[in-house]
Amino acid sequence: MAENIKIVAQNKKARHDFFIEDTYEVGLVLSGTEVKSIRQGKVSLKESYADIRNGEVFILQMHINPYEQGNIYNKDPLRTRKLLLHKREIRKLIGLTQREGYALVPLKLYFKDGKVKMELALAKGKKNYDKRHSIAERDANRRMQKSIRRDI
Image (cartoon, rainbow, N blue to C red; front, side):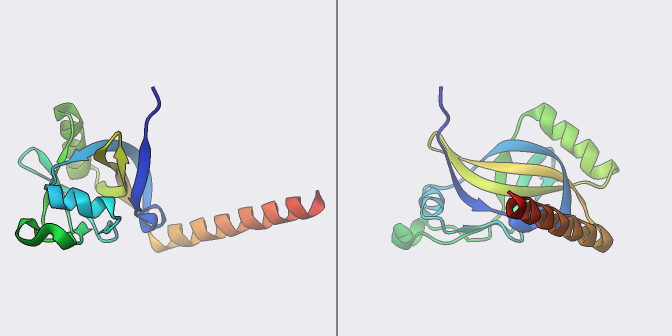
C-alpha cells in the first residue's frame, strides 16, 4: 500500500530556530475553498504556531490566500483552524507545553491520499549561541564533503 504524498508548504526556518524533539501527523479542519487554495500552493507556514485551548489544538497565523473563484465562500486568510489529534496525544502535549516549555511548531503541510495533513513538531527554542553552533557545524560538514569529493 503506497502512500501518495505531495508536499505543499514547508517551514524551513523552524529547524533553524528550534530543537525538534518529536513530530506528529495531524489533520486540519478546513473549508472547501481553503483546500482548493492549498492545492494551488498558496499557503504560508512562516509565522504560524499551534496552541492548546480547552483540550483542543489550534493552528494560529497560518496564511491561506483566498481562492480566486471562491467569492462569498472564502474565509479570513489568517483565521484560527482546528487540528485533529488523538485525545492521548493532546494530553501528552498539554503536559509538555505547560510544564517543560515546549512549543508546537508546524514543519510542513502536505496532501496524503487526497487529505490535507500537517507535520507538527514538539520543539524547544534555540538560543543565539545554539544557532551559531548549528551554522558552524553545517559549514564544517560542507567543507568535509567538498574535500572528500575533490580527493576522489
